[in-house]
Length: 365
Length: 197
Figure 1 (cartoon, rainbow over the protein chains, first blue to last red):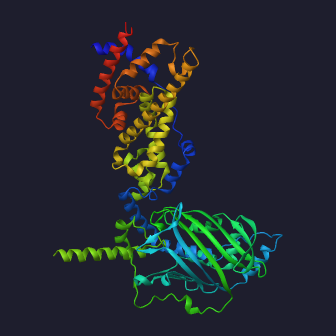
Figure 2 (spheres, rainbow over the protein chains, first blue to last red):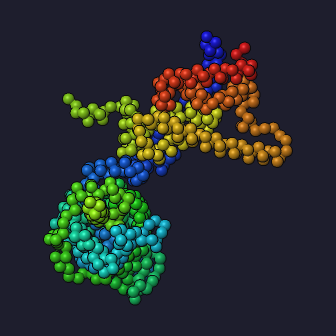
Figure 3 (cartoon, rainbow over the protein chains, first blue to last red):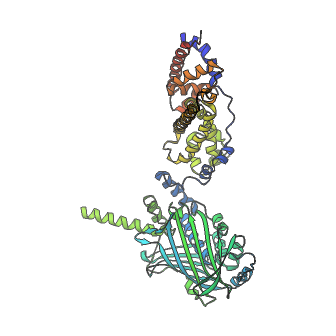
């Protein structure tokens, strides 16, 4: 009764003191004020890789819904293709190199062989090479490129072939081999992906793609005894088609910068270097990794046998199946099969560990 | 006849429960998080206000709470308890702001002391002109935080017991009891200061 009496004077007092006429919450304004959070909401939480349960469920969903195995493999292929001819070919210059001439010359190239290195490192630690299954992911590269047939990229570690990617353009087939594990992954390119591969697989198209990229002329330099003009470029524009094609979940290319050396006499690329920052994505098994790649252009318009681009897997290799990969993912998500951005390598680790477990169990018996 | 999935799609966002909205937000559906923001924003302002006793700061705290909740959403283990979860984030955010505010206040007071005697800053003193308001604010400040919180939730935007139960994760009976206790204590404090006569 006494409280009811108190309420008579207390309630109006509290209404006056605390009460407000609140406006509607403006979510659009909030997202503008919190761009990082807005980005997180837009891309989903699978990238954060914190909650194991959530991540596992999301990974499962991605695998089931977006054929991520293919996407990841295709991302690797596209990446390899792009770095074959990643140069700034726009406009014309007043120095020793006329980019328009270079553009014409590159357009006339039908085949070429490139050599170089591909190194995966941790962000902010350029000397710390990413290690996978005892293998330092610093590969010596050999690339064969043919406008008609496609692309082959071979990655060697201490002279041993670690992986071989073959993209056969006319057959629309991709084969990835892992000789160390006697494993292969082969898939027929989906229409959209095949089209993108064709775009990246022809010098003319690559040149067109790169025309919009920004570049800066750095001056002259002698490289491998060849007088060259150096250009720097820092843009992800050439990768726009990849970005459009591949969900960020699969391949999160965050930044790109590079340099290209163009021989003054021959008006052709001599060397290209690229640095890519790849965010946590399926391709890097939710790790942040940097990729530094160097390509040296050694031979142009040479005879390349069609057999080089054969996509028939060797007889003693076994195929990586989706079931194998699905079994592998939940337990090894952190282990990072990301060195190549492909699941299959990691799958082998999983199997090996299971073998060890079985062996230990047998020993206990 | 519409299929189940079509019927699901046409359900209004407002009809969806918290756990569904959380799950959708985790799957890259920003608008679901927007709906959760709209659903809880006023409660968060009220909770923050009960800690900070400053409405403008409380709005900032509510905005920051939503940002923190967004960043931590994938750590929420029971999506159906989104309300109590975000309320606890809000309390922490507001307490942090209060600590920062108190630090700033001490700095200003030291600075004023160094400059010799002068008029206290009205910004920190509240509205001196309205003594009744000051007394009420001080009385509210002396209430235990959980009791003060229910009063702010109840009297800010006339929140229903059901809404309060959703954000506090307590039953309506518990909330009713808490409000009664809060008012009883407040009435005693205010009567001692000359109110209610």
